[in-house]
Each structure stands twice: as C-alpha cells, then as structure tokens.
Length: 363
Ligand SMILES: *Cc1c(COP(=O)(O)O)cnc(C)c1O
Image (cartoon, rainbow, N blue to C red; front, side, top):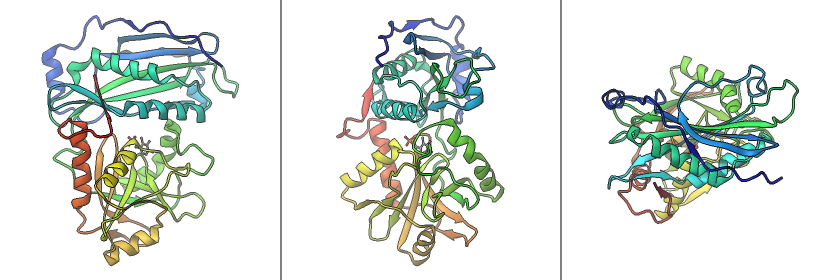
C-alpha cells in the first residue's frame, strides 16, 4: 500500500508564546517531563488520504472523540530522544534515524500505519527549530516525545483506519538531581513485562501500563525501579521498566541480555555496546540468570551493573532487593567501567569528543 506523498509542512506559529523571562524561570530547574515548549508537530493519517496535514502549531489540548479507538484498545506507540546543545553552540539530535526505524517497527507490531522516516525526522527538526529557545544550557536537553494514537471513531476491534502522529518537547535537566547516584532495584517475582510473541520489543504505552503495578511494588519496598525476569522460566534477567541492563565483570568483560523479542532494543544499549567494543572490551549479548547475578555479586566475579536509556543515559545499579535475598554490587555506588562508558557517550552527544560512527545529526 503506497500512501500519497504528504503536502509540505505548514507552520502556524504560537500567537502568544511564553515570554523570555518566564521561560528562563522555568528552565532553572526543569526536572523531567514537566516543562513543555510552545509548539507541537502534528501529522494525520487515514487509509484514504495517507499521511497529510503535517504542521507545527501551538501546543494545546487535543479534542478527540471519546470513541477514538486508542482510548479503548490502546493502539499507541511512542519514542524518546533528545536535542542537545553542543559545546560549539550548535544543536544536534543523537541517532534520530534509529528512532525513526524503531518507530516504524513499533507501528508494524501494533498494526498501525508506518510513518516514513523522512517525515519523522522532518517533524523533529521543525519542532526543535521552532522551540530552540527551550533547549536548556549545561547538562539539560530538549526531550522529544514523538507518539502516535489510533483516532478512528469506532468501537469495533480492528486496526484503526486513522492515526494522529504528534511530537511534543520538554525541557529537561540532568535526570538525577545532584549528580548520578546508584539506584536500588526490586526483582519482580509476581509480574512479567513481556513474553515471547508479545509486545516487549515495541515501544508502546501498553507495556508501561502493564509494568506500573510492579514499579509500585518496587517503591513500596524502598527501591527506585523494578527489574523484570523472563516470562517462561522466571529466571533470566531482562530489563527495568524502561531501561536496559548491563553487567560488568572483574575480568573486564561486559554482558547484556540478547534481543530475543521480549526486550526493548535501546539505542543507548546499542551505542554502549559499540563504544565498549571500540574500547577493546569483551562484550557478550547472552542471557544472565538472577541466581547467577546474586552469586557473582557475592563472589566478586561481578563488579558493576548499570541501567541505560535516553532519559537518564547511564545509571549504576547499586543494590538488588529480592525474595531470595538482597545483594549489593561492588561497594553499591557504581564503578569505573560504568563511569567511563557514560562519559564517552555523553562526550559524543555533547560534541566534545570525535564522533567516529556519525551518530550526531546536526540541526
Ligand atoms: C525506551 C526504552 C528503553 C531505552 O531505549 P533508548 O533508546 O536507549 O532510550 C529501554 N527499555 C524500555 C522498556 C524502553 O521503553
């Protein structure tokens, strides 16, 4: 099915954008996901018209019909990426082609229309251009949230014939206030995130909805995040609710669970695998059992563990709380391999180190 080519992007600039002084105030300590910019990008799709009505407009609530299928059957996908202020004053995205490709993969799994990559990238570029004043200085960034909802007005259960794709942007500070600190994680024994054949590899809101009860239990047990085991054997460590996991061994090698369909293929994960190999480290994409993790932490064979994702980049995992016994990794605060990988990724993202893989997409 080839949809008609979309008309050019229209710009409807905000009639009354936030005043510079007020914006500066909001950017002092933006936190994560609470400060939003003036504009949003919108592109509509219908089976008849294909992709159309691409525009940048004032950010505003969405009027949608209460029978829109997303509200009932959760046909929804999203992405998460950042626009960074570079050391030389420029602005760049990090591997946006990978987000565009993953967005299409997610759409296909959820039986949604696939947005062409060039439209995805153009929507991001145009939104960042419209709201570039909202990119914070220093450690902050402009967090971009492309997403797509099923908007056909119909209660029958079938793939929607209409979709709304949008991008909103949020000024964010450093994810962890006061610097990176190690997190504690709770091993969920009651719930799983994804099963083979399910939607674990798709970035869909439903995966998050299903993970929130386990996240709530993690918080109730005094932990920051939940770690999920595989759904079949309840033995293999998969990932956190929204971040991939890496293990660092005393022999200097690195391990992360393989992408077998139940794990979200993180772009941060992929970038760190590449940087680790570039640095000459031995890297394995192999399953890792929870009992092995505990035994290795206790014997000292395992020395570091960290979680990674676009929002928080790299976060050390210091302590694991589990039904079968809690354990601490190293001294519980992180370690040099985690730090080094974190620094080398951030240096590329900020344009302070060479970019041998062409990951920066300058705007
Ligand atoms: C988005 C996401 C990640 C991290 O992906 P990045 O591309 O590195 O941001 C990891 N796990 C889940 C479940 C996610 O949704």
